[in-house]
Length: 293
Ligand code: GDP
Ligand code: K
Ligand code: MG
Image 1 (cartoon, helix red, strand yellow):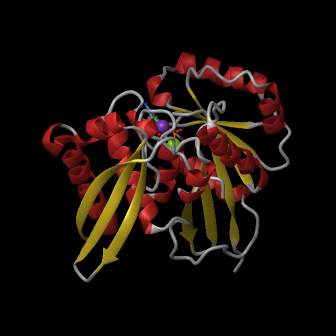
Image 2 (image 1 turned 45 degrees about the horizontal axis):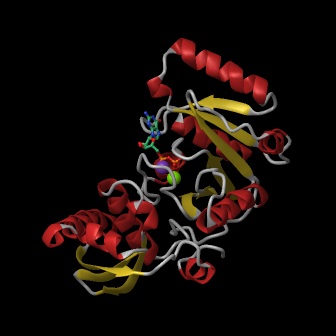
């Protein structure tokens, strides 16, 4: 029996729906999703296995202009997404103010691998808007195949997947067939906690935070987790903890509920907050947290 396998990299501006799409393909909440930009900081693989195929999706942080060190590392992930893919999925959303980066569009238009341009969030548009948007992208990228979708509502998601299977090269699998992702359990715990922080705190707080899970102990009927939330300043520490610890408690409770579903096991989670000045600009710290790999 012939077998197809390959890497599909999903790129695009922040918030267009890249993580939503990958999760729709994989069927698990691997990538955290919020309405804030910079939710996804790392590249995350999501693997979809069938009897005769293995599609390895890679969700990337959005394309942004580097403003500080962390963002530069994020852009490295995006750049490498061009290099190691068999298929490139470039996602845009209805009404997007596209980047005016000619070099980027040139790269997409003349890519040596198949490119699918997904026009996402069409649930928000009417027929007329949709047609004019498709026309706009056709003019911008004449060689690229355009598929309008709604990642959130699952509209055309199956069609995109079938198209990817058609384009995928013949190859044996790259990962064991029961594997869902390349990231360790601790990564998902960190991300889940960060998701709750993104949801519940305002302004710069989420961007000043990094989470590290210090211990993960799994026994027959329970997983015990201890994670540290790193912030840059004492004032941020106070905000994270909240009045009598109420804010931090909410983060812990909500993360625990989601993680219990994810791991299908009872979970005990202990959170504490530490001040680690300027972790964002410090190269060594970034390495420790898995950036710059
Ligand atoms: P990413 O930054 O590109 O990974 O985008 P996310 O997947 O995190 O999604 C950003 C926001 O857009 C979230 O609030 C999603 O629920 C929302 N979103 C994603 N796909 C769709 C869609 O097809 N329609 C609508 N209306 N919203 C969507
Ligand atoms: K986002
Ligand atoms: Mg994302």
